[in-house]
Length: 232
Ligand code: CA
Image: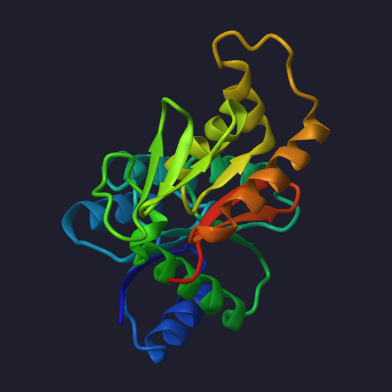
């Protein structure tokens, strides 16, 4: 059971979501606008949030930014209007973990939400670079660039290291292709630049190197990549 905050101004949809998620065994708190949502977030603690972006008083993006400042790891599923590609991207950039486009089925929403809650509870989903090097623990070493998986080292190129570091710091969130290219360009001494279509090749190579690690780099079509914990 999780305590969920549903932020939606459409009363019919709000009640539908509430009924569905209560039936799934969750405890539900409702907010009908952004102002109320921020108030609830300040006074109660939640395991996850379903957030409509188009809200009266304080819009969903502002709510998202506000909550991310204090609650960086709280799973947030954003609801966007049909054809709202810009909304979707803005939502993900503001820290949403996933999105659904209206209209959607309640089953789909429940499945996505369940996946977010599960991911939030996986310890490997938030590997810490300074964490203990216990069995299976993940640790990124800077010099030389490599990933420790328990007692096993995976050697990385600088580019692979930068890519993995970026993905690990945003574990469970979408990292856009532009973000990766920008991170690479920020590397000292890198003047060559990387064609956007070469990124696919680097990701493919990194995936192969990570075959023994409990990590999975997911392709989020049209948006970028997401690092997820996989298996034990
Ligand atoms: Ca709305």
